[in-house]
Image 1 (tube, one colour):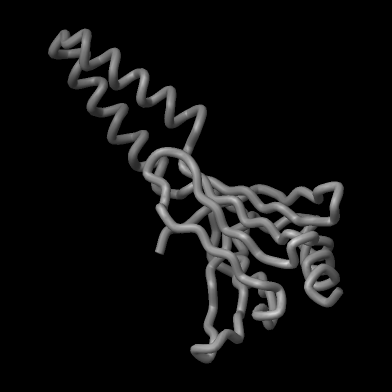
Image 2 (image 1 turned 135 degrees about the vertical axis):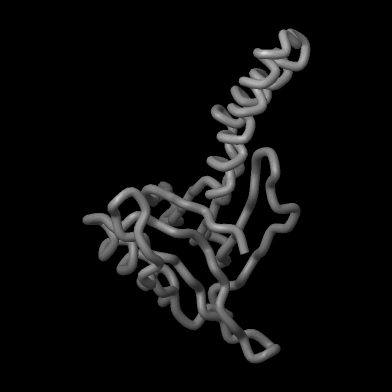
Length: 154
């Protein structure tokens, strides 16, 4: 399972909640690319060096990311992916199939506590848990939980 790290959430004008995060695997790829660029620089391979720099810039500007949207108007939870190395699937879960959204402790990153946002579903196959995104713990966590609970209960 891939981990996606988000920083905060956004409230849309229609009442929807949007969480956006980048894939944790981008950092190791960027470090490997930096080492490869150093080797190419030492070999004086200008064409490959140019391609590597262009790809590194692409990763910097458009990293692999996941967007989790609690769509108020459609009454669904949507998970979408974008960027290089993205997952090819998307997922739509109706609010009626979601039992609860939990923010569980998921370790530390950069000295800050990380909380995983998980949806517990009660679908036809008995349900299960769906990992949505990981968020750094902050002052707005309780507001996010309250907003999601209110949106699901309407």
